[in-house]
Amino acid sequence: MTAHRLSLPFKLRHAGCLTGSSGHAPRGLAGTERASGLIGQGDGAGTGAIAATLKQTSLSPEQSRQAEAELASALEVSPREEETLRLGALLYKREANDSKLAEILDALAQVTPDEAGVFEDLGHARYRMRDWDGADRALLRARELKSTPAIETRIGK
Image 1 (tube, one colour):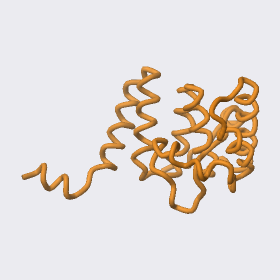
Image 2 (spheres, helix red, strand yellow; image 1 turned 45 degrees about the vertical axis):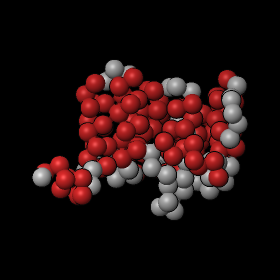
Image 3 (cartoon, one colour; image 1 turned 90 degrees about the vertical axis):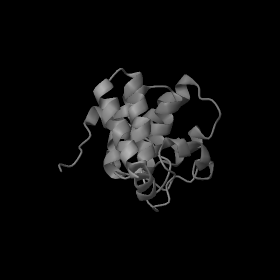
């Protein structure tokens, strides 16, 4: 497998994630709403300001631009930082910017290849973008990751 490399324009447009690399990240973006305790900690590459901004219930256009600029700076330093990627995903999900959301979720999927929620959110973003094949691949991967041996055994009987 080749390493996923983010282009400079991508890095300059994106920044964000929800959890640190502690291994106790909420599953996918569905957990972003639960991660309010993490927002504001910002132990990633300069993500404290982004987390503080995202703590607010609504963002002005200027706050969104500033958060995107801070995200870009954080990704320039550490493009594979899980916390930064999750904050970026949260930012773009709030902004309903599916093209940027899909880009950041692609990168997050490389960092967390076993998180069904990331692939599920990626599939939904790609679906809204009318990328049917990309949506199908991501949603099928999410389903694979969610299946358990007990369920497969019951289905097989």
